[in-house]
Amino acid sequence: MSTTSPAGTADAAPPRGAPILQARGINVRFGGVAALTDADIQVAPGEIVGLIGPNGAGKTTLFDVVSGIRTPTSGSIVLNGVDITSRSATWRSRNGMRRTFQRQQTFGWLSVEENVLTALEWHGGGGGLLADLVAAPSRRRREQERRLRSREVMETCGITDVKDEPAGKLPIGRARMVELARAIVDRPKVLLLDEPTSGLEETETHNLGETVRRVRDDEGCSVVLVEHDVAFVMAMCDRIVVLNLGQVIATGSPDEVRSNPAVRAAYLG
Ligand SMILES: Nc1ncnc2c1ncn2[C@@H]1O[C@H](COP(=O)(O)OP(=O)(O)O)[C@@H](O)[C@H]1O
Ligand SMILES: [Mg+2]
Image (cartoon, rainbow, N blue to C red; front, side, top):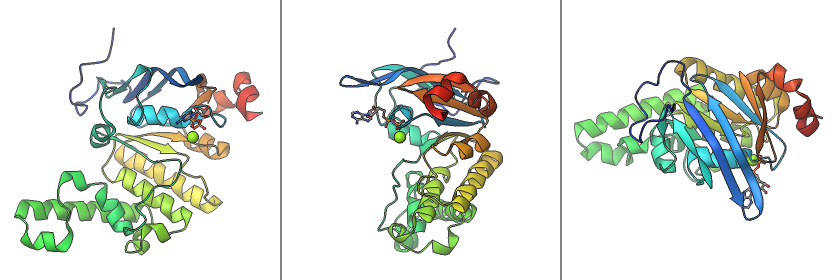
């Protein structure tokens, strides 16, 4: 029996207890390199899942396949019971899936607020004050909603004080929070974070963790987190998936994974 329905809307409520996200039997090859081999992951609604493994294990490649910027050699991605394997990255981002990248990516020449606003632009609005003056009332209302939501999220992410500064001028810790704000502002159902604490200091890592957890608690979104900071990932996550050489070698609670001999041999040492 399959829980997959033909591609349609991913908005309908899933069957009770059903995963919000599934990657099934994902294979990716780069020439002779098997970056992923039959990789499976499942994420429950509201769950925080950590994806760990040594460098080159295939974590980013799996995110690329899930978020739709890379087509797998075989396998499927299911969002909320709907097979979305053939859907574009843009479609996925507009239907509840948002991600951040391992290398920090903001629009450096735009202000922090504009960076956050553009993540909502597809809802309409945009064009700034002048456009507001000449615009129809419905458009003005959408623009106002967009601004309110952006301000709320900038507050959540602790970046209100730098909202008018160019994002490219910010130190890495603040820039990471701008990326997070962009990723959560459209209320995703699934949030994919690729090494979000990379380059952060201890307090910044702590703040980011608290913010991600608060978003999960308040908005009920699921989170998949790629992390090399093992202490952080063990403290944050409900469940951990371990990749090694493109294969899932273990899945379980942080304690189960920590004491798994195969994981210790491959990764934890
Ligand atoms: N664009 C690419 N072209 C060729 N090989 C790649 C490419 N991206 C990743 N790889 C290879 O695929 C494997 C998995 O890489 P990646 O997903 O980046 O791992 P991780 O994020 O776990 O460090 C590695 O062997 C890497 O060298
Ligand atoms: Mg990576």
